[in-house]
Length: 390
Image 1 (tube, rainbow, N blue to C red):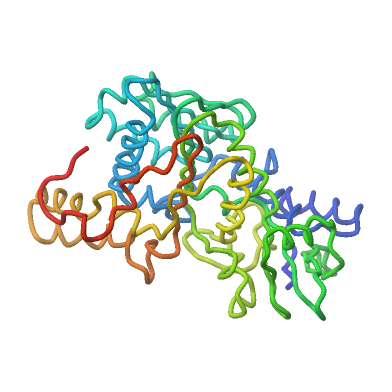
Image 2 (cartoon, one colour):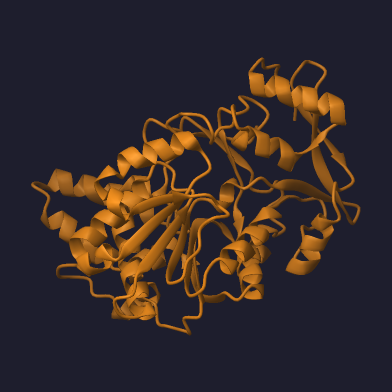
């Protein structure tokens, strides 16, 4: 794959780095595209989420998503006991939509918890912090911002929604029984192209040995070395509480399956997906699907116990999705409005062309035992009528 020339400052800087080093592992190239301090996609002021941005997230579809997450947080606070101060730490909060919906729901439906809540946002981008502060101005007394190495939870929940998919990944291929790695080099026409070389680090081979799963012969795949490290760090910052991870991805056996020959790397710009990370560098999102087996395995090594893992639609159903749908429909003024609501909300739960199946939810706990989580309610135990509430 090779791209046409581009004269953006970031592309010029990357070409200079490549000329000096002879080539960059894809993970370094992706890191610069997303997180360069001046030119990275996530570091510059732009509208990324929603109709006017590049992609939708579950929290940007409808406030009911955050309301249902809030319902699980309420139960978590009850499981941790009484009237103790409760912390929610969210990393990578985007525009602040999910935080707003959670805080609105808690303020209205669980005022006791809201009054003893601290909601901490971990955010690397100063422009994002400013937008979040504007979005969440009504809840300023409950909010704080901290760096990734500052926060701690004594009693609470760590939350991330579509965070891990944006960690820089190494891209590898299995050829003749050996692992190779994709490097980015300068093309003859001024763009970028790929070269497949020996791995840049033994950590890539070590990762697959640790995981117990590896790509099959002839397949390309992504390796997120940062994700297990991140999960261990999260576990180490929690004294007692829960970790709630929402993202799109698969268990390792499915992620590295034979049929996934080209891997899962995708780019998003103006709601169009493509597989070319070498064009419009710094102007598009670059993502790959999350390996949830690696997150569970790393968490277990650091003291986190997997309490529930499943598809997003089951998570939302357990928390009362259909109760909320009925409540919202009852407030609609006519059938056309109710139909539009149903069409919007189905994106959160339908398997095909929606978020219900591709998105997964992982709930881990530390020092909390093995509680029966609300999100894990069996289908038969979920009421399908009547008002919903906390």
